[in-house]
Each structure stands twice: as C-alpha cells, then as structure tokens.
Amino acid sequence: MFNYICGEIVELGNGFVVVDINGVGFELSVSGYTMADCQIGKRQRLYTYMSVKEDDISLFGFSTLEEKAMFLHLISVSGIGCKVAQSILTGMDCNSLAAAIFNGDIRLLTKVKGLGKKTAERLVLELKEKVVVEAKDMVLPITQNPDMQINKEMSNAIAVLCSLGKSQADAQKLIEAAAQLGASTTEELINMAFRIN
Image (cartoon, rainbow, N blue to C red; front, side, top):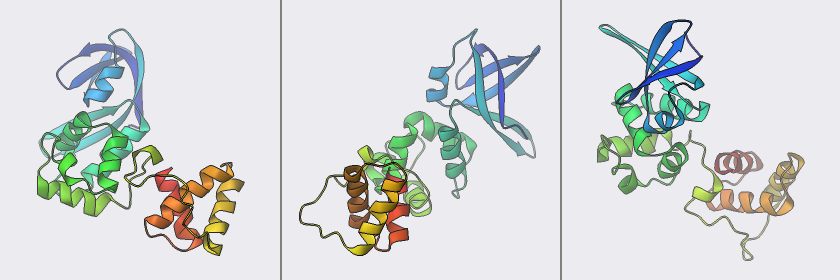
C-alpha cells in the first residue's frame, strides 16, 4: 500500500519513530540502524512495509531500500515474523547479515537476539542463494590466484564484466572467487560475481 512516507520526525521511542505528515502522526517500527539515522525535527523519507493481521495493523520503516529488501527476505522464512526480523536487523547491519547467511556462519547468526540455531540454519538454507554480499565480506580471499587456470568460460565472464565497467583486475578477482565457490559456466560465473560484488 505504502512504498515510503516522507515527513518530519517528531518523536523517537523504544523501537519506533513518529513521522508527521500534514498534521497526521505515523508511528513506524524501526531497527536500531534506522533509528540512528532519524533525528527529531529532521525531514526524512522512510521506506515502509505494512503488516496486516486479524487484530493488528503495523507499519515498519527503513532508512534504506537495502534494509527493506533484507527485511522482506527475512519474513519470507518460515518462523520469522516482522518483530523478529526487525530485531535481527537491529542486531546486525544488512551486509554483515548477508555475509553471515552466504557463508553459513551459524555461530555468528545465533549471537543475534531472538535468533536460535534452528532458525539460523533455516535462514542459511532458504536465503543463501538470494542475498547479495560485498566482496570484502566474503570468507574466501578475493585475490588473484596465480595457480588458477583461466578457462574459456572464465575468460568470457571476465570480458562481460569488463564490458560493464569493471577493470580487468577486478573482473578477474571476482570471477576467480566465483569459480572457487563452484560456479563453472559463463552464466553461473557472472551471476555469482554480481552476488559477491
């Protein structure tokens, strides 16, 4: 229903903010990271998600589209509701969370309040193929490997990345990392490179 709302922050509470829009105060549940971006008196755009239940309608707010996207990924997992997802996003920033899921780091995930081992394992199982991770957060070192043979599929993938603006060195690092993760065809290599970029 709402993609975002934009107005003046008039109240900061425990896990929520109130945004005034033409004299109407909208209360949005927010993570600690979004809360840190909000200041009373500041005009702010917050991306929103509306949760409608039989006995409750709630608005959740996010300062970035990245955080909203991660929230939507989280609530798609069985057993994770909006409140738990918001708690997870308070306990870990989006990219660290994505990296932990991608790398299958159950130990790190279970340090987040409200996230038990079984739920963490389900997160990894269901979201590993969906999250986008920056290269700096990969477990594998993203460095050129002198012992790695660049085959035809890898050469084609490197050429595609270069055509999209990557330098030869950066493209090769990403494709080598993608190959180390098990990608083999040109398409698989490119798709994996985009996910770890």
